[in-house]
Amino acid sequence: ALGKISALSIIALMSGASSAIGTILSIPKLMEGTGIEFSSVYKTSDYLMLAGVILTTVLVIITIMSIVSTYANTMKEAQMISTPLMIGVMAIGVLSVIGASAEPSTLLYAIPLYNSSLCINGVFSLTPDTVGVLVTCALNIVYTVLGIFILTRMFDNEKIMFRK
Image (cartoon, rainbow, N blue to C red; front, side, top):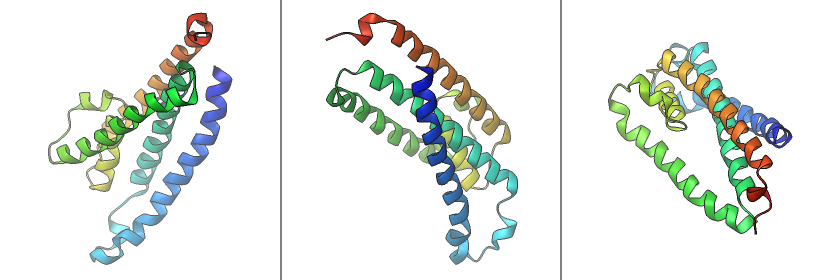
């Protein structure tokens, strides 16, 4: 189980790093037409927060997808399970944008995936919550470790691994 997660995580982290770098490099282009001087808007800490959230979120998503793929017997079953999950993740992203006007409670940063969406929205709206970002990154790592534990238990359970 640990080998499966490790292999997937390495590739996913490289992809996440690419996404973070691409996002960071595209911000100046996006701000070109606004008339705001780019250097006065985003700081290095904003970029670090953005990268930390993206990379830890990738680990959570990989863990969830590994659990789904371990539970499913066939590729078709895995797709049937993962489709509602993907729709839910998209809904979470929309919900975080809809509720963006209110100051989020620190407890909202404990909800997996929603916390990441809140943090990214905060950075892009120039109102990052440093404590929220730290809580999000820490909890994303905790959720990943918990997921690895669940995955290990699934690998040890013959009813899950050898069911028909």
